[in-house]
Image (tube, rainbow, N blue to C red; front, top):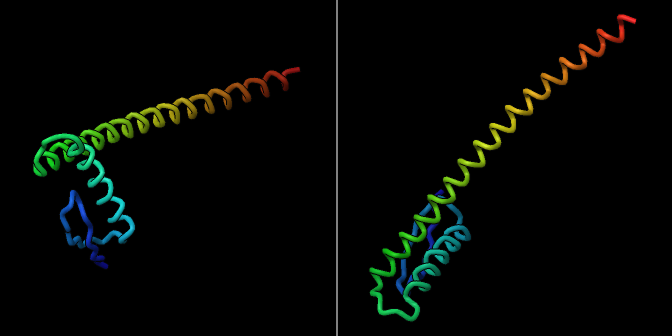
Length: 104
């Protein structure tokens, strides 16, 4: 289902249509607006320049988060592999202990 919402970004009105709910779309628009407003505050940047720089900042944050997420996935995979290895070693040690106890 498509949701329609009107938002204001940098003083401009935009009519959005998306499958996400209105609350989410408002949150995204507010984030973009905030980033652009930060750049425009106290400067003589044009709206277009502010929007482009805001987009660059958002893209930079996005790519850094993707990289951090990939690093966490890699670490998790390594830890899971180590855990599996240690479980195997533990099972082997338990078998050895059992064998040694039964020799007596």
